Image 1 (cartoon, rainbow, N blue to C red):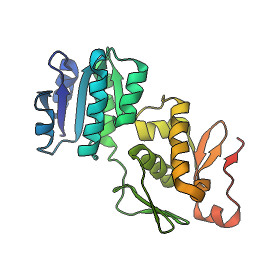
Image 2: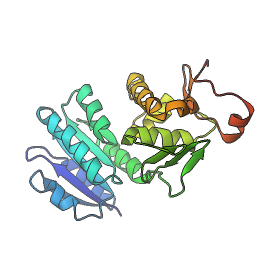
Image 3: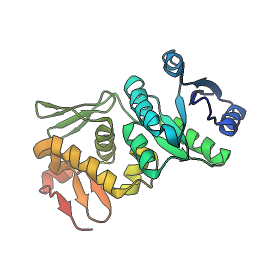
Image 4: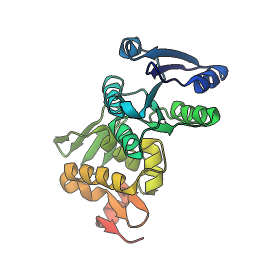
Length: 235
């Protein structure tokens, strides 16, 4: 059983999903905007549901950012009533792990929640190391040589996933699923985040290879020893 917090506007709800989650054995605590964070601060939640609608999209985006800052280890599933695709993209970018647009079947909502609960945020105590690059995915701390590098959360998760799949080509859909919780994120948005990440890495940006038409790859140690590091390869 997992403990789930449902953060709902006064005039929006997720009755069917809450009922379905409860029937599968989870404890769902429901609270409106007046006491969201006071309740979340009590801790112990494995998942946060953020229920919102189109005329409060900006509030939802701000809430996603606040939740991510205050509870970095807790996944967030947004249940959106009528928001635009651009607003949903902004919510994902602000810190939501997945976004489900109403109307939806309760079974799909339960499956999305289950997927987030299953993803233990594959952060590890043991840092990733590659050449001069050392990343602690749990804390988000990165050093290149002796230089500390500040990464945004998405940048850290992108780099961690690529390092976790070291030596393998990671498709854009796989990266989208791993970092944003959906395989259908715009390729342009992924490229923007990768470009920002590369800019921060300096000369170590060459570790992130573009496999044209497919996705990205970080070479493993043996590949680094035997061949130069191109920044772009044709598929």
